[in-house]
Image 1 (spheres, one colour):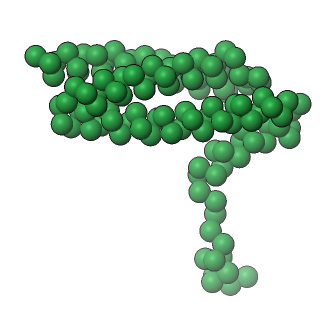
Image 2 (cartoon, helix red, strand yellow; image 1 turned 45 degrees about the horizontal axis):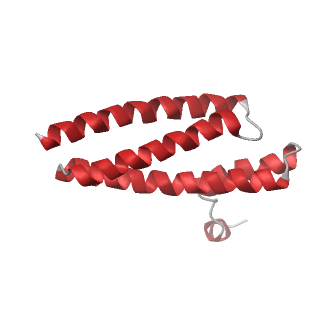
Length: 124
């Protein structure tokens, strides 16, 4: 195989590998198809929510504005609810899922407290 052929076939991006793990749950374990679709939809919603939340939080911190930070705080509450779903009510919860969801829940809670402190300091 020459080097040119290897350049034409790039490795899949990390996002593709991350999304392939939940998709493989339905093949490896006996996972109900309708529950798998619900869990993947919620995971995709959580990814979009995280991107918007991080954008608004960064914008609010850099401009020292209360409105983007308040919107980011509201989205943090939604993200916390999705983390609780993946921690407790997901159809198939593996040990790694529990550890990662609990860590994410703790970090979101800390971030929510810090956002409230930042909003309070910007209001003054």
